[in-house]
Length: 386
Ligand SMILES: *Cc1c(COP(=O)(O)O)cnc(C)c1O
Image 1 (cartoon, rainbow, N blue to C red):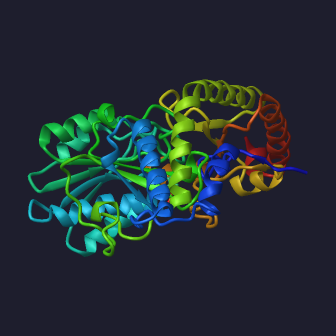
Image 2: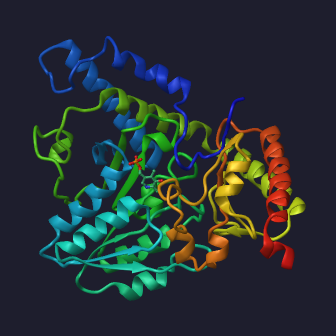
């Protein structure tokens, strides 16, 4: 029995076309881009350059503004620590939100140990950051604002454009973790008004272990790694050429199919949502009803343990809360920040549809969920009382 994959916010499968583009660089085109004296090196350098242009094109940047990293975790670290350490003489205050990915939250926590002050802004019940709260928190010591573009758990699209406007007006640098937006919805750095922006290969049908940081021309950062001066001295280490080629191709393909796919996934997601709401009572949507990622649905099923529900629909790969926290029984910190009541945050499912999913699969999931929610509720003493 094939398990139907509906966890595309955690990772995506590697697209066959992308693997094909990578293959030569895993085999006979093995040169080091830094080898400038022979054709093996030139060939690898050309491949890296081409990929850099492809990444830049997807986000509306210049190729020189792209720094390849080992993924978005590193890109977020490089952005936040990099700015903090480069602009330390200007101030020590950073603004972020309570619902960021751990790659941002833990980096900020680490900087607090070095004496930086961090404001973790709350969100409303839809998981939305209020730009006016950002404005109100800026002081003359603020050096960086870091707010994600799309939340990976609840799919809410943040008002990044407005926050970027405020940051510019106040002369504060603005970083956005755009991992969940890039390649799925339009993600253009000039429109979003970001100075730094992080993306990841494996969230957009590319390989794992590769990502990129957009660094606007003129913005200084202190590198994390020191060594051979790769990536204009900002990220030392021999380039992951196959990974970089894969990320470039992933960006190119995403740019090509994005609009059509976003429309298809929105329809599919709405079909799933309507189907569930028609068949099952006491289900609550987490995240913004309209301003959300096309394929994402995050639902709380009252009187059902999320873990038991997931186990009962075992033909589907879906997650409860965030992929990083689902091994513990703690409620998701994102749902807690949204003030979702504890009883509902424990019974949430995150379903993320992607390129491979079909109407038949969605209908099958609706069927399985309604059957199993009914069965599990029959066993719940709390449910019998109502
Ligand atoms: C997956 C993810 C990351 C981490 O990306 P990696 O490339 O796996 O390090 C960071 N931020 C968000 C929002 C993510 O979804």
